[in-house]
Image 1 (cartoon, rainbow, N blue to C red):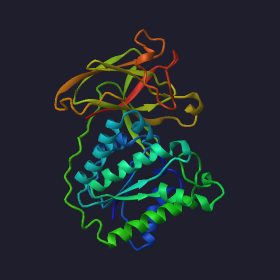
Image 2: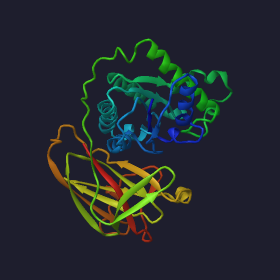
Image 3: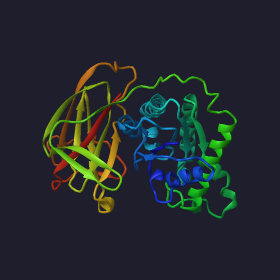
Image 4: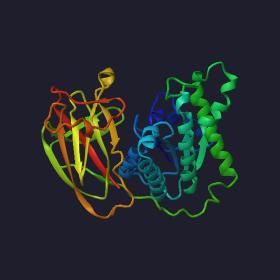
Amino acid sequence: MNILFVGGSNLVIKQGISTLIPECLKRAGESVGNVYNIAVGATPCLFGLENLSLFKKKEIDLVFVEYGINDMPLYANDRVLWETAFDGLLSLTKKKFPKAHVITILLGRQKERFWKNQQRMHQKMKTISESYGALVVNIDEMLKQKSNSVDDFSKFYLDDSHYSSPNVTQYISDVVVGEYFLNKSLGYFASSKKIVNKGVGLNVYGLPGQVECFENSRFHKQTTVLEKNETVELKVKGSPVAVSFISASDSCSLLVEMSGHKKIINTKRKRATLGKFSFILKQIPLYNIFDKKVDLESFQTIKLTAIDKDSLLWNDGDMQRTYGMEPAGIQDKKVYISHISTF
């Protein structure tokens, strides 16, 4: 079988579940072929939907989806956009791979202050996933039930958002594969009703202009470069919902203007994390702009300008605060845009 992983950093870490699940399947007697992993750390399901839209492989038998941790900010800041994105991700998965078995893995944050909101989001993820015939494995709930057997629940975690490896990640992988085989033998996937792909489709746009490529062991990403104070306009269909980009050491902020809305997106990582990576692939959703009632078949022009906090176009009220990102200073020179996404 060919396997696809879509999600966040828990599908990327060494000796993590994207490595261990295929090994578990092999030990159980499955013949594992190609394993594709389009997961990106610190990105929400909206980015998973974008990446899946661009993913060209056709023969996939088993898909693992994991956004139970990374989707918290999107869920908290724009519930409508989050639900549309997660529903769209499951819908596109079934549309592209109608015969594939899909498993949604629910992972959770360690700190208790997130638990109530996270539980509500997990319940909605379960409802949406099952409506598309996906099997849901709630690892977060299982581990919390076991918390009384250890002195400190945090021992299950490497940090607030990642599980300890290889012990806990091995347990997670064993449980997920066990649940898959159990439910498969009980006819869960065979008895699923014919799925109607009702999700809203995502449009993904590149930009014209100067090109710069970024490459590491996992990605080769082509971007369009906007020099500071440079503007580009793009005609798009539907409602703009996200900007994906490369965050580099000289990244500017980006002013996004569209149909009466203005957003300033900071594309530079904060100084504390800037030196850890040569570049970071990111996507930032545009909160509280998407409206399902608007005609998503109409076209509009979106205007993008690279700026810094000393620019005449800067307005603190337009800035969308995003964890880990900071406004560009006078020393910052460019924005590296990968795609604009619209619903």
